[in-house]
Amino acid sequence: MANQSRTPVEPFFPFATETLREASAVLLVPRLETYFKGKREYIPSRTPVFYNPLMSFNRDVAVLTLRAYQRRVQRILDVCEPFTGCGVRGIRFAKEAPHVNNLVLNDLNPQAINLTRFNVERNDLSEKITIQQLDAHALLSRHARPKKRFDVVDIDPFGSPSPFLDSAVRAIKRGGLLALTATDMAPLCGVKPAPCIRKYLGKPLRTAYCHEVAVRLLLNALVLAAAKHDLGVTVFLSHSTDHYIRVYTQIFPGAQRANDAIGRLGYLVHCFHCLNRRWTIGLSNFPPRTCAVCGGEMAVAGPLWMGSLFDSDFCREMLEDARSVELGDRRRVVRLLNAILTEVGGPPTYYVVDKISEKLGLPGLSKAALIKKLVDRGYHATETHFNPRGIRSNAPISVIDAHSRELSRG
Image (cartoon, rainbow, N blue to C red; front, side):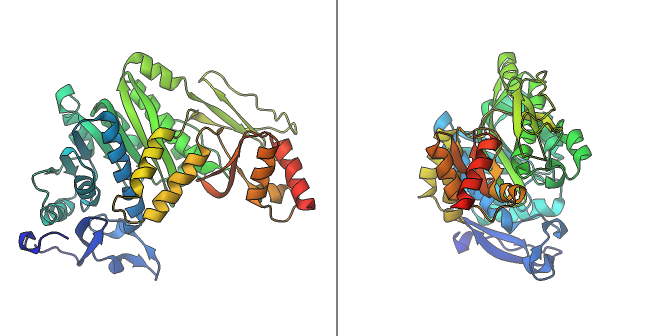
C-alpha cells in the first residue's frame, strides 16, 4: 500500500466514495453499493465516474499483455488510455508493467479527471502519468504525427470502440500495440444486425458460436480502418469473457502489410438446420449458399477476420508471467490462457455439444468423450475458451453427428 505520509488529502467529491485495492493499486472510487440494481446487478453506467470492479480480470490480462509486449519489442513504452474513468487501468500499468516511461490518462468527464488525479497522487505516480481532459478523438489526433505517437493505445469505452479506430491507428508507432474492448454484444452477436453492419462493416450471425464471430467482426472493422492509412494488423490475443470481447493487435505501416491483412478477411456460412458451416478467405470469394449436407439455405456472416486469433508464443509468455505477477484473479487468468493455448491452430468456429444433442434428440453428451473420439479418428479437436461446452474441430458435422450417436449408445 502507498506510504500514508504521501497520501494526498482527500478532496471533496459530490458523490459517496470508498477506498479499495485492485492488485497493486489503491483507489478511491464511487461507493459501489450505491449503484446496484436490486441486490446483485452492479450498473457502472450510473456512476458519476466510471469504475467497473467486474472488469478487474480484463485489466489483469491487459497488464500481462503489456509486459509480454515490452519484452518482445525491448523498448521503453509510451502508453495512452483515452477513457480512463478513475484511472485504475493506467495506474496498474504504471505499477505492474516495468519500463513504462510515460502514460497519458484522459477523460472528458471533469469528475473523472479530479478522481484520477487524486488516485495518481495517492499511488505516487505523478512523475510517470500525465492527465488530460479532452475528447478521445482530439487527444489521439494530437498524437498522429510520427514523433508524437504512442507505443500502446488501450481503447476501453462504454459500448463500441468502432468510432475510435481511425484516430487510434494513426496514433500508434510502428509495431505498436492497440488493445480494444467491445461491450455492445447484442449487435455483435446478431440480436441487432443493423447496428453491427453500421459499426463493424460486417453482417453478424446469431449462432451458438456468435462470440467468436463477434471477435472476427471487430477485427474486420480494425483491418479496414487501418488499411485506409496503409497500415497492417496482426493479432496477439483475443478473448471473449463475461459481457465483452477483447483483442490485442500489433500495427505495422506499409501498403503490403495492409494488403496482407485484407487478404485474411472472408466470409462464413452456417446452416441452421444441420449445423454445417464453411468459410472462405478473400473479400470477393463468396461461399455457396446451399448446404452441401442437407441442401438447405445457409446464412452468411461477414466480412470477417479469418486469420488467427492467437499468437501461441505470446500467450505462452503471458502464462509463464501470470504465475509470479500480482493479479486480482490469478487462477482465472491462468485458466483462460491454458484454454486458449489448447485451441491455438484450430479451425474457425466451434460446436456446442448441447446444440448437437438437441438437434439429434440425444441425452446430454460428454464433451471430453466426444473430443477423445474425434482425436482418435485423426481429427483436430480441442476445447475452446469461448464456451465451456464448445469443441473446436475440423471434423465435418456428419462425422460429429455419427460419433455423438455412438457415444449415446454407449
